[in-house]
Length: 227
Image (tube, rainbow, N blue to C red; front, side, top):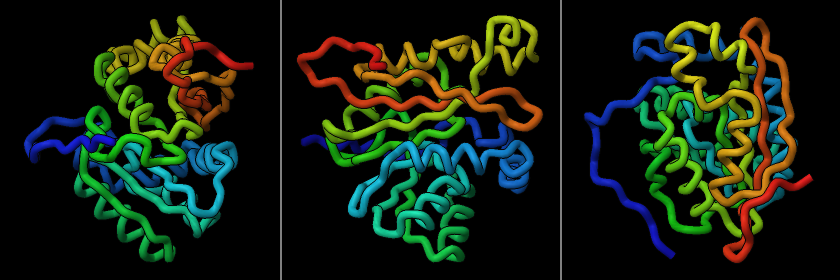
């Protein structure tokens, strides 16, 4: 097994969950207003967790998904990764108040600092569209590396049709250029996963979310979509 260890990159640029560092206090408010809690609950249910499972949340932000997971499944091992130290500090405080034990690491999705095959489940919630195209592919390759052969990726991200992609704001068009139609599922498939049909859910006021369930293909298999 190999473990990726990155040198300290305190000055490395990243996009905070709210786009700007000073907006972090609004992060949890926005998640409540947009109705992310039911999405998180569905992701947890779809993950099919069992006692002893080791779970990674990539881009965990202030830890809402981790906290909800720990409250439902107190006997799973929870790990959260995010580049934002202030978000991680909030996640830690919230987990302690909820009585949830979680390990929080500062790091980047493209270089997961964990050994091969070390997680049973990997979550990613509304983080993929923040990455550029190359970083998206790097993230998925890393997720496949750290997942056990019978593991599962549960990924939720914004999804748009071609009309919405063309008519959104310039920044939104840039962020969602790779999320038109079934592009997210196709990208995950290309990374070496068998992907279930996308589950699409509406958010309050801000469009739709696609939830993807994907299992690593064995090394001898060619990527395919399972139905």
